[in-house]
Amino acid sequence: MSAKIGILTVSDRAYRGVYEDLGGPAIHDYLSEVLTNPWEAVPLVVPDEFERIKAALIEMVDEAGCSLVVTTGGTGPAVRDISPDATEAVCQKMMPGFGELMRTVSLQYVPTAILSRQTAGIRGKALIVNLPGKPSAIRDCLDAVMPAIPYCIDLIEGAYLTTDESKIAAFRPKPK
Amino acid sequence: MSAKIGILTVSDRAYRGVYEDLGGPAIHDYLSEVLTNPWEAVPLVVPDEFERIKAALIEMVDEAGCSLVVTTGGTGPAVRDISPDATEAVCQKMMPGFGELMRTVSLQYVPTAILSRQTAGIRGKALIVNLPGKPSAIRDCLDAVMPAIPYCIDLIEGAYLTTDESKIAAFRPKPK
Amino acid sequence: MSAKIGILTVSDRAYRGVYEDLGGPAIHDYLSEVLTNPWEAVPLVVPDEFERIKAALIEMVDEAGCSLVVTTGGTGPAVRDISPDATEAVCQKMMPGFGELMRTVSLQYVPTAILSRQTAGIRGKALIVNLPGKPSAIRDCLDAVMPAIPYCIDLIEGAYLTTDESKIAAFRPKPK
Image (spheres, rainbow over the protein chains, first blue to last red):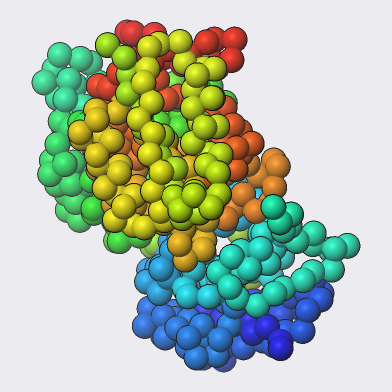
């Protein structure tokens, strides 16, 4: 059975079609390069609206059965940036280590990395991770957290993900 | 038009006058050295009282029109240390990257840097940042986060801040 | 008077006796090596139940008079992992710097360190710190945060802890 992975682009401009969605395809390309298990993308573009983001996350996890949902965009301090808030609203548990590590890694490139409020959390059997909107930053963030994602999803009883070890060495502790 | 910047000293002893306020002047000196745009300080000293800190923050942002408010003191674990809590109570959005980076930087000097609960957040068109009480630690923290502050304030539609690049290289991404 | 230190093992399997509690003894051994003041352990094993963990933490702080409570286990993303949530529920103040530093240190060993939701907080005159379940990770985490713990407990008016400086150099700022 193929794993389902939600790819949620959060952007007023991409939603209205005045701006090409670059974040969603960047995530799709990355996962295609790195994952070696069968998987299926569940893509969606929504505007920067709290209720729309929440509804999309819930639908992707509860209805579509995604084990992983990756969002792009809406992580900054601006008034319309509310992806982390919507994520927190639908999660039972927050995973602060994801945001900490992604900001630390992004700080190697730009000092404004601290402006990202990106976070991650667990809803049911899914991990939800916020990424920035910019494709190069998406890649840096995924490189940082991807090694921990397959084991995280094992622990919450989601799909079994495997990676191309030459690109990302997913870590699973040896069974005791 | 000159930018307004709130400088809020939170200290029972400074408020009662039994202790000279060193934190507020340290912040004022730092900003005078680094900022090159016209700006005006809105200084205040309050005791470590939750409601007094909240009221001061709200007044500085909503009435005085500050684009940036910097607090000093009250960030530790002691029962009277409640600056971060009062900050969180008045902000619409928290910015976890500020506290993370300031603690990381302070850890280079003292292992007790992890005892600081300092945070930052957004209220309306203002960024509020907590700093420690000690002048040398204030300087280390501001050096760390200042490069990201002007762009942060752009994003929330506050005043346009500029810095002396020989001291702090404020980062603004190139417009697309 | 000897300091009281709670050692709370959170584990369904250890509680039922199907698995030997390794975390609690690892914490006890570590503290015995490092602390030089008289102290007394208040050990307990509870299952991964929110109310049981909360009750144990409250009992250790409010009734037994512990100045420090260290938990082991239950910090991950799995549905039964709720030690950080129970900790947050009983604390008046959270201390984000502890979790940040412990995750950073653990990341040197395993990329899955970001899956730990471990945190720390203050309840009354006690510091509560979550540790992972694995003895080697317990040691890495305690090495990282122990230098700051005695001063933290001074600030909240708990017991006066001292350490063997050849092992852990507890830091106390010089009085002004």
